[in-house]
Amino acid sequence: MVKISSFQGIIPHLKFISKVPTQPYSNYSVNEREIEVQNNPYSFLNIIANNEISNRADKFATIRGRINDFKSKKILIKSKQKSLYIYRQTNMNHTYTGLICAISLKDYKNKKIKAHEKTIINREFVFAEYLKKTKIYAEPVLITCNQNLTSIHSKYIDDENKKAYDFYTQDKIRHEIWEIKETHLIKEIVSFFKKIENLYIADGHHRLASSLRNDENAMCLAYIVSKNELETLPFHRKITNIKNLQNALTQIKAICDVSEIKAIRKNSKTIQFYMDKKWYQIKFKHNPTPELIDNLLVSKLLKNILTPIFNIQDERKDKNVHFIPGNQNIKNIIKELNKNDCLFLMNTIDINTIIKIANQNNTTPPKSTFILPKLPSGLIMMELA
Figure 1 (spheres, rainbow, N blue to C red):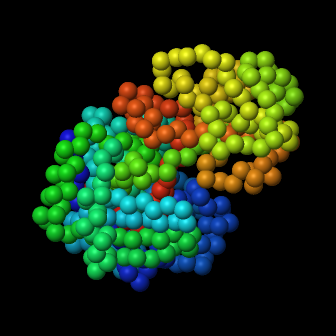
Figure 2: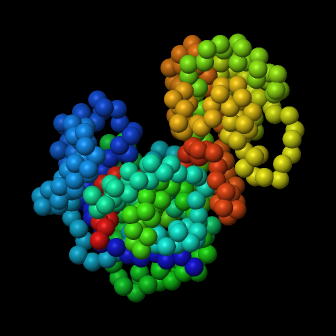
């Protein structure tokens, strides 16, 4: 049994609905952020971009002040009643439909909402401070479940008259929102989730962990999507500043079955890597283990190659390890490699494998999964009490 609830959403006014939402802050270069802020006074980046402020507490206080300013100017509108939201996102290749609601941090603490990735303590403390100062969830945590949610949203998305918002953002993504206000309908959906034993974090591990540190009795903003609608991709590894490429290649060949390939293969069960203008594939020697984690290619790469050959002990902290989201164009990445760089292509970890790992209370190596959709900041938000 998991607990969800309705909440008073903060949404851009209809006049500004396509202008406020942004991609995650980290997606923008410094130059791109400056251009967006200058050209679009309604962009959510105007709230969170404050590079001129060095003190963290002052930064967070400034963000809170700007949120209040957007509210006072009616750019952002807070709902007078508690609602649930059906949200559908459509890009060129995929459509994702799910429920935006509040989820219980006690459920997360009690492992009814399960994680599959470790968090970094320092980042938890920083975001906990952010929440305390800004009192806002600017975008939901992405949550998934084994259950099919069609029965929840089909009755709404089939009726165009019930749609509250339908617009495109600059990245050519379509956003559709249906607001569920009726008390009896909200109760039906809440009851539906009471029958579900577990939810699973798809993206947003640090936000949930930080939220728990901030107030374990509170709720957290979430977007719940059935596992069958998610798109699961890998994070590739770019290793930079390799002193001797040929020596590294010789060492890899000494412990693995390495062969040169003419081109990469999609959905390969092997690790493929690019070094010194050539593609190779690695087949590890057969060493069966009952541990699901140990059989992941990301685990084998770290254990057999990155640590012993490149002396990488912690992928997250090592400055020579760069994580490349699986939706980026490989040819463009190759063009940008320096002569002392190497690119390791990872395979996709199936969502059912991720759920199995979470059910075992285990965690994957860092940045093992890149899961879509990515929700915009500043679209549907929730204030903390």
